[in-house]
Image (cartoon, rainbow, N blue to C red; front, side):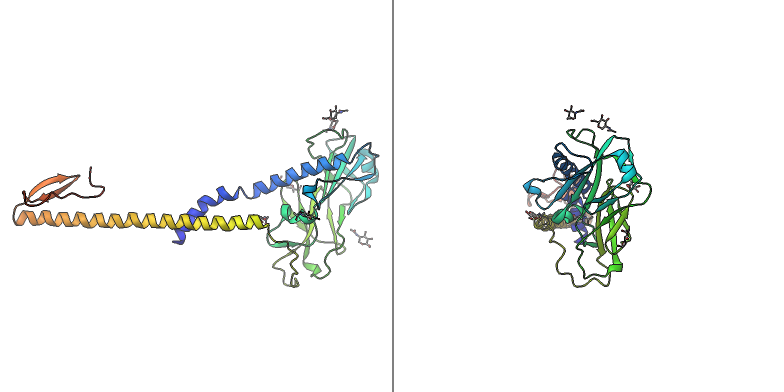
Length: 306
Ligand SMILES: *[C@@H]1O[C@H](CO)[C@@H](O)[C@H](O)[C@H]1NC(C)=O
Ligand SMILES: *[C@@H]1O[C@H](CO)[C@@H](O)[C@H](O)[C@H]1NC(C)=O
Ligand SMILES: *[C@@H]1O[C@H](CO)[C@@H](O)[C@H](O)[C@H]1NC(C)=O
Ligand SMILES: *[C@@H]1O[C@H](CO)[C@@H](O)[C@H](O)[C@H]1NC(C)=O
Ligand SMILES: *[C@@H]1O[C@H](CO)[C@@H](O)[C@H](O)[C@H]1NC(C)=O
Ligand SMILES: *[C@@H]1O[C@H](CO)[C@@H](O)[C@H](O)[C@H]1NC(C)=O
C-alpha cells in the first residue's frame, strides 16, 4: 500500500510542486532585477556619494531599496562607511572596470522568508542585500551584476534590533551568494556579519539549537495558499494511489481466477482420457472438452476468447 502510494506520489510530486530549488533561485533573480529597476528610478540627476531611497510598488510593500552611485576610483580609495547597515571599506575591487557603479541596497522586511527561507534555521533578522551594478548609464535596463571583492578589510553588515532573548553563541551569519550558494560564518560584535562579496545576508539560529527560548511565533506562517495546495495534492496523491491499488488487486484476482479455470480444464481433459470420451474443441488457445449435443459449448468469458 505504502509502496504504491509512494510511487504515485513521487511520480506526480515534481510535476505539481514545480522544480524546487531552481525555481527558488530564479525567483530571487527576478526580484533582484525588479528591485534594481526601482532603486535606479530614485537616481534622478544623482550626486555621487549620496544615498537615494527608492519606492517599490504597492504590491511589494514592506521592501526597502536604495541606490548609491560612486566612482570606482573613489570607492577604492575611500570606501563608503555608512550605507544603511553596510560599511564598505577601502580597497574594494570591481570587475570588469566601470567608471561609475551603483550599489543597490535591499531590505526585504516581511518578504525575507518568502524568498530566503533556510530549512532548519530561524531567521532573526530581515534579509539585507548589497548588489553592485554598472552605474555609467543609469537609464540602461537589464543590467548584470558586476563582480566585487573586498581585498583589504571585509565589508560589514550590522543588524539592528535583533530579538534580545536568544542564545547568542548559537547565532550565525547566513550569506546567500548570487549563484545560490549559502555560507555560514560567525557573528561578530553580537550583531555584525563580515563578507568580502556582494549578496544577501541575515542572522539565523539553528532550530535544533538547544537554548532557543519558546519562540513567540517569530516564524511567519508558511504561505497559506502553498500549504493548502500541498495538502490538496497529498489528497489527490492518496486517491490516485488508492485507485492504482484497486486496479492492481483486480488484475491479480483475475489472474488467479484464470489460473484456477485453466487447472479445472486440464483436470477435465485428464478425466476425458480415462472415462466417457468427450470430444475436444478449441476455445481460444485452450482445448476444452465438449459433450455432444447435450451441453452448451464451454465459452470462457475472459481474455482467452480470441
Ligand atoms: C508586508 O507588510 C505590508 C504592510 O506593511 C503588507 O502590505 C504586505 O502584504 C506584507 N507582505 C507579506 C509578504 O507579508
Ligand atoms: C522554502 O519554503 C518553501 C515553501 O514554504 C519550500 O518549498 C522550500 O523547500 C523552502 N526552502 C528552503 C531552502 O527551506
Ligand atoms: C557600462 O555602461 C556603459 C554605458 O552604458 C557602457 O559603455 C560600458 O561598456 C558598460 N561597462 C560594462 C563593463 O558593462
Ligand atoms: C543609456 O541607456 C539608454 C537605454 O538603454 C539608451 O537609450 C541611452 O542612449 C544610453 N545612454 C548612453 C549615454 O549610453
Ligand atoms: C558561488 O559563489 C560563492 C561565493 O561567491 C563561491 O564560493 C562558490 O564557489 C560559487 N559556486 C558556484 C557553483 O559558482
Ligand atoms: C565591534 O565593536 C567595536 C566597538 O564598538 C568597534 O570598534 C569595532 O569596529 C566593531 N567591529 C566590527 C567588525 O564591526
